[in-house]
Length: 175
Image (cartoon, rainbow, N blue to C red; front, side, top):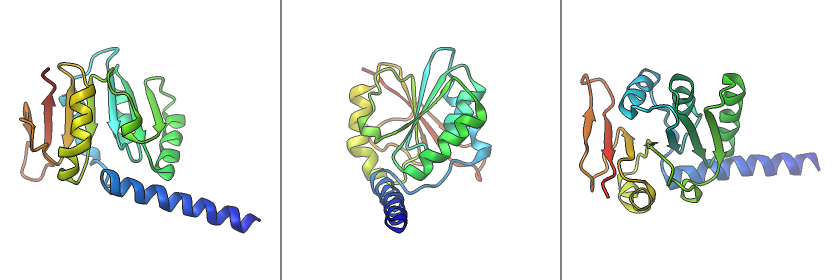
């Protein structure tokens, strides 16, 4: 019986990792030295809400929650990464930090002031994700895309201080 449960857990972990890779991007973490740049670009104030879609290990959400007065919400579909996020939440003991185990398509983003994503497949960005953001986000909400542009939108800011830095794109919802 224990072997069957163990196999089921391994299968569940592998399935959720595969689903996340197919839905948005395989897990590649945001560079630690770029976290401050993301926070600066988001320019969050007290009471605002920051979403990290496909938050992986939760480092961006945790950084925002710890270093700003905004509420940071990480959305993750893969169970192993979600467990890491929950451990991170216990370590940080931060009331401004929340993690949810779900698909980003199941989350209502109407209250978001800023949304962060690191999606490696730009074709998917121009598809369902962009439609969801355009439909749900309120006017003046910010969309921050790490490394990859949203081809159908015009960036308000393209941040790449040095040739070795990863490009960060800032978009603003205009309705």
